Image 1 (tube, helix red, strand yellow):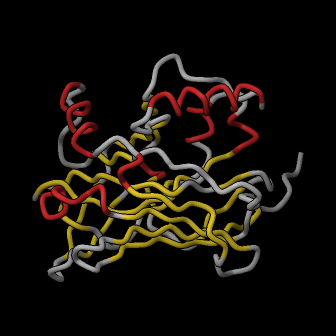
Image 2 (cartoon, rainbow, N blue to C red; image 1 turned 90 degrees about the vertical axis):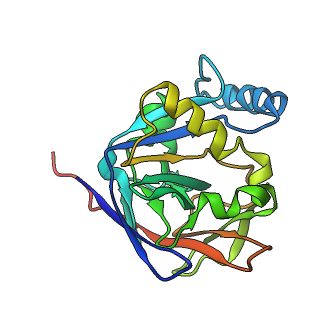
Amino acid sequence: MTTLNFELPDGTVEEVQVKHLLNAGYAGREQDEVQAHIAELAELGIPGPTTTPALYPVSPYLAQQTSEVRVQHARTSGEAEWALIIAESGVLLTVACDHTDRELEVHGVAWSKNASPDVLGRKAWRLDEVREHLDQITLKGWVGQGDVADTLIQDSSLAALLSPDYWLEVLTERGLNQPGTVLISGTVAMAAGVDQFARSWKVEMTDPVTGLSVDAAYVVEKMAEPIG
């Protein structure tokens, strides 16, 4: 079982053993825009969901706090997201980057989500302490062709996505609102003209009220060619 550790603003560390990992998809608050995005993806051969928002179970071991992601080919990329973590002491919020296999995505989104890890931040906030100003929290992603992610590819806020409380209700309905559950939010739009198939990724959430930030960064390494 994967164990994650999160440093909180008061200096304490919360340990969480991941029992359930779920990735939300098509989770923008403006569902008209979501439907337009689904139509765009269909033109690329990526199958749309049967309902929106979608929710994909992912193997729990794919929740990782790592600085390196190993992939099998060049067409993989991250997605800037937030992550909700249910701990023994309550609900935590951190940043996440859902690394996705774009070649596999055309065959099935759920399959593509299980091909690479969800990289989570090492710091987190208690949801209760930021709930009243969640929509002000910014969510950004950067990519880079070298070891440093230095080109902005995603720039939005939590206001663009369905809220943590929305998903907590869904988890409660499914009997998953319990310690050990981690839910990744779904992502925001990428900037046109920026190459997402990058070597390095960084995602960051910044709270303008407290001045605090949480981030996650990693490099992408291609594995050796298979034999046989």
